[in-house]
Structure formats: structure tokens, C-alpha cells
Image (tube, rainbow, N blue to C red; front, side):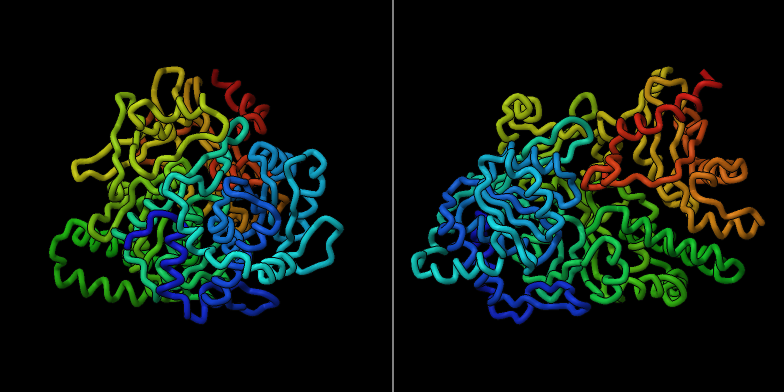
Length: 598
């Protein structure tokens, strides 16, 4: 029977996979420590009872401030079973943002991962009158008023006899019940609480499993934050329901090493991971030079030609098939090996993926299914599939979802995936969802003859030059990120005569070049001021952008010494650029750059 709620999803998964010895793993003290399905089920049951014992009632809100780990999943499913609404909070957020979310949501309890996260909450606890309970996952000494997670579960274990019908109670949840309140990071202004129901997210899980090949024999590495709906829907609910073994990465810094350790068969990521892997492969070949470089270039070209046949469903010539066998042995197989050698499929979302990178991985037999969605749409709206795989697009709408393009080019969507609305914000809700139920995404796009959606840019990110030319910056920035000398890029130029680009150099690659040229290796702040470095980066950027229209091509480049970060405020927690923050931070340099021309 098709699940209607997230509680149905969990209990149905437990019925199918409930005796599996490993449901999820996390690395502790250098060893991958497993959590079995029976242990996961028992923790959810005990967590449900403990929440009830603490006096939390249906409809109350409970916050989770934690990195990805098994306890996150346990608390989430326990809250849902108790018919509470949980409020995920990014662990990278500063204290004042956490205070805003806890206050705005009226959370009565919060679960935190570490002493570092606990300190943030304790700092603002006096300003949060609704907050009654704090539970810490780590087993360490805690101050009065804070409960350890093991004691929380022990409370529930001693009380389960008072809740014999807990599963039946949980299954009485309806698709319209509020499951979670997710605060959008936002590129400007205060975050808004997105109200997603059981039906919203469950419909997304069910629809995606109808069209994506995800198997109970699969294994994944979970590293995108569970606080974000992309990882939560794909890397949490969908994989739990499908019976996939979930490994939780230790940190973003350990992802590459742990991919090699875990050897996953399935990955879900934002484009940044794929960009880095591709750039590393290109840099390795290019820096080797000679025969190795020639072989890499030949293999990449062979893969492109091969895909021109396979993606068009055309018969591949025998000679080309033989060439791909050689290319796979010499190049593509080695890329697969560096990623564990077992990957069947990967999903990309959250930002546009450069089609060149997507095709490279497909040629390497690691298919990337690029999709599109937002927090407000639970999140998936469209996705590429094995039946319709079209790099450069984000695929067709998933089952049950409608998509259309408004007169001004904005993408609109309607269906069971669209949020209930913004929490305590009817004005914003009315602005986002029109009377006919269409959600206005704020993205610009087009639908091709095969029904695939192509995203051109964020509506609010479009750069309109003084001459009236519209420029979509994200695809142009994506082109630059494939260059081995560029770590990051942000386009500017709204209401100016021409566009320009802020570039963050790849200082590792730059160091090799400096050695070859006999130039000094200085601190990044000094390097970006060197004329030789500025000229080199400008040449590399122009080479990457040579196919752009003249009006789209940046005329000037500004090098910055420090990459954009969440902590620095230039990135949202889901790694989207806060353009206004970047422009304000480098306002003086930007004005000086334009001064000579305008």
C-alpha cells in the first residue's frame, strides 16, 4: 500500500527491512559504528514515549540543531510519531540566527549535537520563554537543565508500557498534518518558516521512487545537511523507505576520503562536489602534460562523441564502442576508482550543474540525475531519469506535479508537493501561491520540445545592464568553475554599462604556476594584487568564456583573496551566493574597478 504520511513511510520500511543488521553508520573514534534496524526502531519508540513524558503535545514544535548523525534520524521519526512538528536548524548558523528561528517557531524543546551547539542555545536561552527542554546527543558532562540523549531514551524506555498503541496513534496522522517547519536561509532578509506537511514530503518520496532506480542493496554517504529539504527528502526519507544503508560523513572536509572508504553506490550532492572532482581530474591530466594530457583529452572527446549517440538513442558505431572501452580503461575507470569504484548513480540539485561536467560523469558510467526544486516544493519538481536523460536540463516534472512558464518567463508549479504556506506570514504566502494554487518559484526557465525544463537563472539574480541587456549570471559562473585556476566566481554589473566578475583563485593550482614562472609564493592577499597573477586569471577566465555573446562577457575581473563561506555570510547554508552581501563586502574595490570606465 502506498504510504500517505511520513509515519506510514517509516513503519512500512520497518516492516520490510526491520531485521537488517545495519540501517545506518557513523565514524566514531576511527571506526564505522553501525545502528541496526531493530535499534533504530527501538530508539524511535523510546523517543516517542519520552516526548510524551516531557508533556509535549500534538502540534508542538521541536528543534534539531545537529550535524548529520543517527540521532538526527531517530529524533525526527520520534517527533513525527508523536505528531509533533520538528524544526531543523543548520549547525553552521550563528547564535542570533538560531535565536530567531527558535523564537519565531515557538519551539518547546531542542536537541543539540555537541557542546559547541549547546553553548549557542544556552547563550540565548533566557530570551526564549517557550523553550522548556534541551537534550544533548554527545555523552559528556552537562550543566543543570540539560538532559543527555541516553537519559532521554532511558526515560522513554521505562515509559513505553504507557503507550502500547503508539504505532496506531502515529498512523492516525493525516497527509494535511504539519510535519516540519523549515526556515529558508534566504539571500536577503529574515528567513521564512516553510510549512511542509506529511503529504507534501511523502508524495515527493513516492513520485521519485517511481522514476529513479534506488535499491535496498544500495549504500550512500550522507553529507549535505539534513537541515535542508534536499538531503532530508532524498538522503533521509527516500533512502530509509527504500532500505538503503546510510553512512553519515564526519564533516565536509572528510567527504572525499570517506567516499573512498565507504565506496557508496549512490550519492546526492550539490554541484560543488562534482565540480571539485572534475577539476581535480582535469588538473591531474593537464599538469602531467605530454602523453597523459593527450590521452585525457582524447578520452574526454571520445566520451562526448559516444554520448551524442547514446543520449539520442542512436546505434553506436563499432569503432566508437571500442574507443570507449579504451577510454574507460585509461581515464574514466580511474575516476570511478577514486570515488570507490561502485557508484551507480548520483543526484545533483540545489544549483545549476555545468552540462560539460554532467556529461563527463555519465561517460565515466557514473550517471548524474540533475533535478530541480525548492524548499517550498518538498523539494523536487523535475528530475532527469534513465528514460529521459538530458544534460543541460533538469528533466521532466515528476509524477503528479504540474509545471508551466509564466509570461515573464518565471517557472510556476502546482501539485501535492507545494507547501501549506509560510509560518505566521499570510502576506508572503499569498505572494508566493496564487489563487489557482500555482507556486511562483522566482526562477526563470523554458520547457523544450521533449518536456524537459531548462533553468536560465533566478528571477531576482538577473543582471540588467544599463543598455537593457538581460544576463543570467549562474551559467556563466558555472563555466568559470571548470577552469583549474578558478575556485569561485560571482558576476556583477546590474545597472552598469557592462558586467564584471569577482574571481577567487585556486591558490594550489596557482602555486604550481608561480613556481614554473619563477615568481614568488606570497600570501593570498598579496598574490591577488600581483599584475602577473591578475593577467593570468583574466586570460584563463576569457578562455573559459570565449563562446559567450559580447554583451554577456565580463569586461573586467576583480581577484579576491578569500573564498566565500557560510561563516563569512557570503553563502547561505545551502551554498547559494548572497550577491548583495558579496557586492557590499567588496564595494570599494568594485567602485574603483568601474571608475575608470564609467
